[in-house]
Image 1 (tube, rainbow, N blue to C red):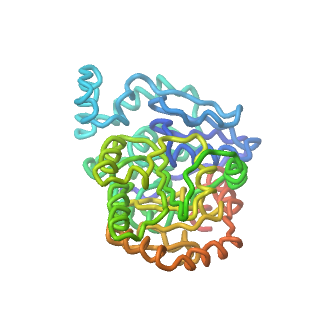
Image 2: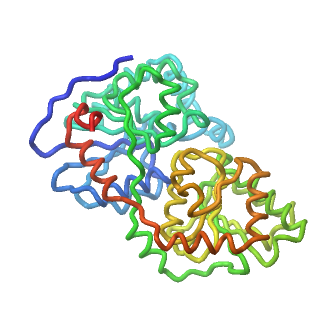
Length: 405
């Protein structure tokens, strides 16, 4: 695998392209919105390409950021094969099978060269695949002067490229830089792709002002002795099934008294989790509130934020909770010690149902521990200025200048 490609630096306004696969509600889309809202757009001409242009995010991007759409070829890139089988949409199903075949054989790279010509009308100084799977393939085959792949996931537990490892060895060899959102994410990536040494860490930007402002909105929210909250996609990786089972155990032991858990988000596990709540007779203890455009107003009213994920790259929702001075109980996932400052601002538990159960039980039995975390959060600060400086340096400077910094 190549280690680095040569770049020439220009002094004119830089043309930047961010590439996303879709714009559904989620951490990656929200992160891009926050980056675009804080970039100095007097220095950059920015386009955002959404390959499969569906979803509700990216409607709040600055007016001088241009939003581009992919061709019909990309309609199935973010749709699981089993969902298409259930829907019995033969046209989309055939397109998905053909797409998987092209990924397996590697001919996808030649096809994407053709699709790029249909979509893009200019050359870019920097092109960023803002997700490291399909978006990286699209960026790798292009002619942008500098190519970056942004990695959000922990590859040791959530490797979306695993089935196509040979293909992605070629893809990542064409990148000038791999950006990981935490040191653990970079380490896990390099274990999978050891020849890819051009890496750097840029933590996720979080729009503090937006979070605080939106948290002031008045909302109707279940409130009791202890109010727990969690926000995220209703997906197996988020571990809501084991969180609900842990709650059930506490209810049966008589420990979960006058307390409620609210889960904000939607996803393909909604019906499964709804049925689980009914089976465990938790209808008055656990609430699925669905997707909320403004989750911050709900988080602000909670006593504790719960992150039950089996794997997590960064966990923006934890940072957002800490900004609102709500402590966090989280399973041990990537970068958790840095996020919670080694339990200064919350509780870290074993990544299992038992760990979640024991952590919650300890808080019920010793509520003063929660008060200690709340007091510590009065001094919490998240350094966005340093992060936006890193991003602008990446967009402005030669690869070697950034790596040697």
